[in-house]
Length: 267
Length: 71
Image 1 (cartoon, rainbow over the protein chains, first blue to last red):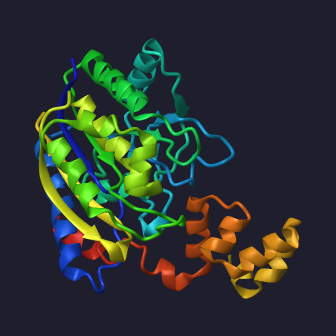
Image 2 (image 1 turned 60 degrees about the vertical axis):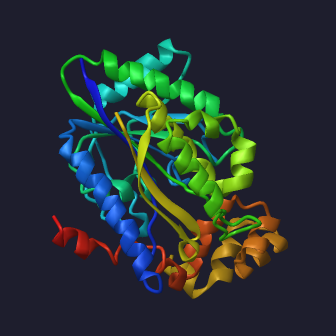
C-alpha cells in the first residue's frame, strides 16, 4: 500500500524583496528548507491542498472542493510564474475522488486546470515541480466556505485514500496558503502576528483542533478573508493524523500584506 | 489588454455597463470596485491589471534566477 511519508504547510505567495530584503531572505530560506525536507523523502507524488484565486474556480461554477485528475498541468502564469507543464498523478487523484464518494464527499474533478500561485509558488521554491502532483482545491472565495470540520473530514478521507492505494508509493502532503491577510476588504494590508503565531503554536503542539474549533467566522475575523486559507494547513495536519510539528519559519510581512510561515509535521 | 490600457473608456463601453459601473472601473480603487459588487479577489486581479507598477511588486521574477542557481 502507498504510504504518507511527509506533510508540510506553507504560505503560497512572495512579492518583490525590495525594501524587505532581510525578511524575504528568511522566507525564501524557509520555503527552500521545506523543499529540501520534502525532496529528501523521495516522494512519488505530492498532494497540494490550496485555494484557487478565481483563475479556475470562479463565479461561473463554485464547487466547494475540486481535485485535479489530469496527467499534467500547465500553470496559469500569474505572478510571472513559468508556464512549463508539471506532471499530475491521475491514479492517486482518482483514488481520492473514489474514497471521497464512499465517505460522503462528491468531489468535483478537473481534467483541465491551470495551477496558479497557490499551488506553484510552494512547488517552485521547494524545487519540486518534477514530482507528480495532485491538486486539491478548497473554495474559500464563495459562500458557504467549507467548514473547518468538513475540511478535516475530507482530510481523513484523503488519508484513507492514500492508505488504500495499491503499490508502495511514497506520498507527501503540502497544505498551502495564509497566514493572516486581508485583501480588498476593510483592514486591507493588515497582518495579525499574534494570531499567526497562535496558529503555528497550536500546530507545533499537535493541536490543530484548537484552530478548527474556532470556526470559519472567527478565523476570518482574526486572519482575514485570505487568512481562511489556513484551512489547508489544518487539512495537512489532519491527513498526517494531527501529529506535532516543527516551525520552519514565520515572518509578519506588512509590505507583502500577509503573514508568511511554514511548518513540517512529524509524520 | 493593450486596447484597455490605451483607451479604457472605449473598451468598457463595449460591455453594456451602467454609468456607476463604468465610473467605478475607471476609478479602479477598492472602495469603488466594492461599491459595484466586485469580488475582493477579482478586485485584486483588476487592480494588478490596471496598475502595471503594482504588478511589478507581485511577481516571482526576482527569485527565479537565484532558485535556478541553487539547484
